[in-house]
Image (cartoon, rainbow, N blue to C red; front, side, top):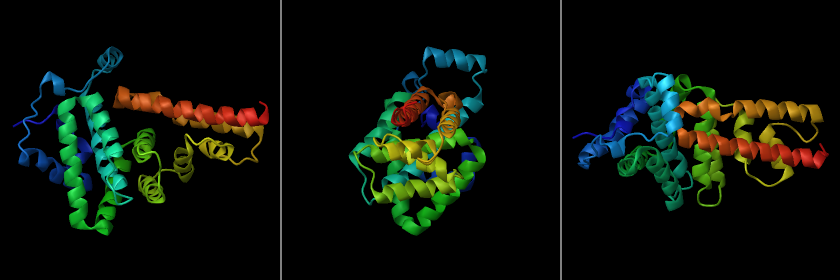
Length: 267
């Protein structure tokens, strides 16, 4: 009984360490449930014409799919911790995850993703909060050793999008994102920047750029250029079109923060 190719791509660093252990537990659910998600065209990763041409130029290597699917499974693992941070599993948060799977991997992946998330929630309940927090910390360090900084930034941004799906981000969710960010080796200023993206006030705009309101005009411009370069969508293009689009939206919100500051300063 085969599973979709998006699952078959969990190779490389995921086949060992804490992520490998969680993968073994979670993926067992797909066989236990008897899902017949064979590798039909409907279950193939979906790519736009531009992606296909770009992938062809790069040889469309196994490494491309390995990065993409490793990113996805890492997201599901970390989301299993973030979603439960406030003690509830919200439909809106789960639906955002389902839509991501549906748009990138097809309808069968939605059912499989639900199975994986349920098994991870079950594992969290069996282990207890403290023990699961420790395995998440270990998983984050494994991710940090095998995933570049820009991809980790985007991973954290997706977790924030999931937390925002129900219309608010509570303290427990913010603390979970900060915890994950630290374990991923993220700079604290970058985590603060992400947590303030989309907020409609001038103080938050300064925090998005990682500077204080007392910064000079030249420091504001320099901070914006650094932030725009750090979050450029091309840095995560290999992870797929949906992820690139999310990065484009994030860059647009960084631009909006910059424009808010420029307007307040008359630049």
